[in-house]
Image (cartoon, rainbow, N blue to C red; front, side, top):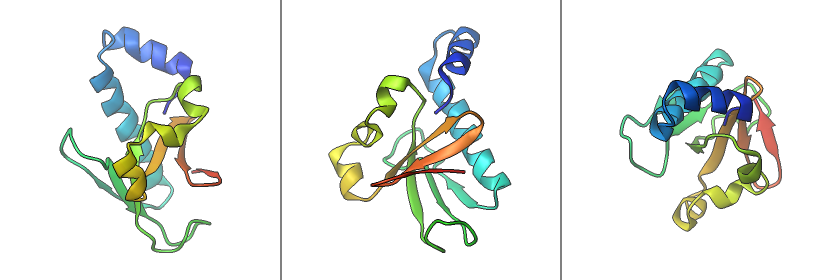
Length: 116
């Protein structure tokens, strides 16, 4: 997810095309993870429960654990309860919410949000 100010700028640039904004957010998220040493595997389709599969050996995340992430575009309202942005099926599969804010990627776990 991105900052709301940035989101408004992108909406103006892309004519409110939410799919294009989502594309930019997803690639920003992936780039951030790559820069921080993560392995990143991007879903090449525009459909599916998972946008990114990732792991990293050297952070405070569980070592070598695959993380399945659905990346969302930031909004204050949505972030009040980000897990509700996932479908029931996604939650059952253990998929996490990811978003961009202030230039950092964030991954929402059950009891915490990890800033990367």
